[in-house]
Amino acid sequence: MNIVKLERINNILQREISYIIQFLVKDKNLRFVVLTAVNTTNDLSFSKVYFRVLDESKKDEIVSSLNKASKFIKSQLYDRVDMRHIPELRFTYDESIDYGNKIEKILEDLNK
Image 1 (cartoon, rainbow, N blue to C red):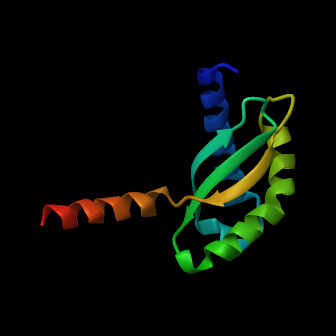
Image 2 (cartoon, helix red, strand yellow):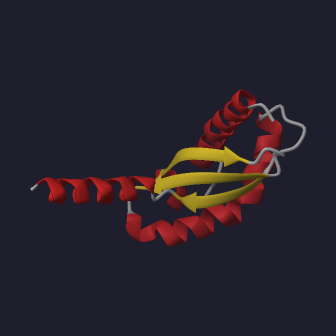
């Protein structure tokens, strides 16, 4: 699939999933979830949805809640997105920021 088209699909999915989580999902724990990225496979069968939460102590609970809500979210996407096939959603905690902070700290320590 064309990279530009896939990137556009990822952006649309991220925007719509964010809206659904914020306004349509009834689980109050999910109100403080921020989606950071969506990566969809070339065949559009799976989308990995990366997120962050304000209270990191609840991240395991949030992952579980999001994965339980994934069927509801997918059903809402059928109504909101003009796609023939909506990919399966897998929610994953985004650790890239933590990793970046760790690398930055190592570089600062090296410079001292």
